Image (tube, rainbow, N blue to C red; front, side):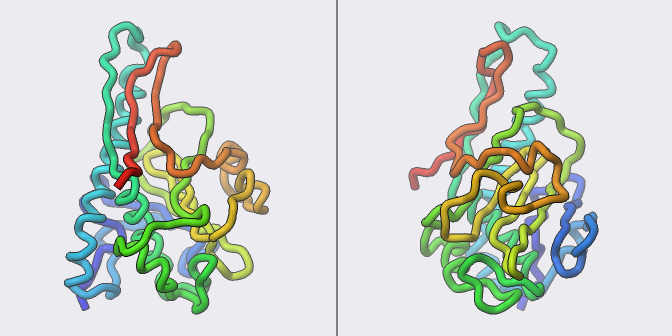
Length: 237
């Protein structure tokens, strides 16, 4: 067995992540260094098999960081001076990378993983097939973008991950990447209107009330109705 970094090292410039709700940080946010996020999970061959997923995750996070940087950089500029910048992301690789991250963080925890999980802390075969690219998520499972007020405020180079647990099963993960908010649903059912309707609490109101947008095709920043830049997610392959 090799020692695998739970969250791909190349993603983090400041080498930290905040997590909450797992068995080892049930009632508090824990800020963890990337060097400490290692676990004996995958053999070297399987790590190599997922290297393309790690690269896809790194590219996606870089694109999101650039989106935020440009948004803040251009907020005092005239829209007429904008050169529209498009940043392209492989949506399926991003989705698989998010799944890899949450599976690793959930491994050997006390809750079942996903709506098809049977053994606490052990991912079901279906999710393993998805993360290794053998099948794609279906039945409303996969990544959602949380549609909030659209403001671009970067407060930290940080990824925040919170499992949403109900009846001892993690059905959804809340994931914030540099203040851009996502959900990863592992439940084969039509999602609720918002997190608040699921009975979730402890997150900011704008997150609890945000609408879910499935496999978003683009995240666009504009000023005065004029497009400035965008992240484009490719879901065609």
